[in-house]
Length: 280
DNA sequence: GGACAGGTGCGGT
DNA sequence: ACCGCACCTGTC
Image (tube, rainbow, N blue to C red; front, side, top):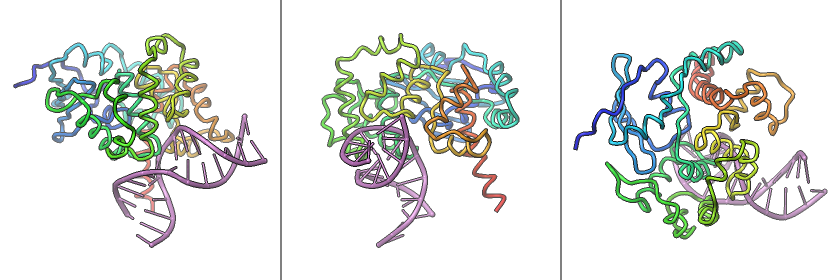
């Protein structure tokens, strides 16, 4: 079966690699230098970048148009953010093609519970196993499992799938969500929704912010992990405790906070490393 | 072998 | 409210 062309889009503000590798999504593969495969729920897309244009192939055109946030003009945001400070200009220049994805809320809740105290490679492996063992058949693989399937699965099996001590968090949160109104959560402002998310087992401040940003498309939050702590201490005004860094950046960046976090994360994780290595 | 990376829960104050 | 430790797995 051949996938139909879903859309084309100029690659200047849609760099597939930047967008997929900046830490917001785990279910993607690089098939070739310029070809990526992406999964979300039971949906599948392949993206090819050639001559300054991204071509997306998928059966789910409308889903992926929204998924990749095509209605938003990132040139405007990138310009606005660049003007804030020299560091921001450099970070935006480095990851100019980053876009914030519109991902599924339930998939994000479990993905980021798994992400806690964990590295990207292992997170991908765990999520892959959960999909392959509990997910329904989907195009070219398996879907992310329905909540009911996750809730019916004993905690120990998540440990067998590589989740380690997070097995209990996954199981407990799946139970909780069985009788939970996620639509009500979507109606709340970010501060209230964050408080609510913090009551889920396995969801702390960082994971809550990731769920808000990637699963609820709330731009006014700023997830702080070890990379962003490094960024804060290296480039920004000092004097805040670690627990205050997120609100410091939220105040600084306002509605662009989440996007700024992605630019800075990607910049620090890649370019920051290279800088450190070449200086020696 | 042993250190380290990576956020959260929990028990202590 | 804040602090320090345990937690699981992979990698160097």
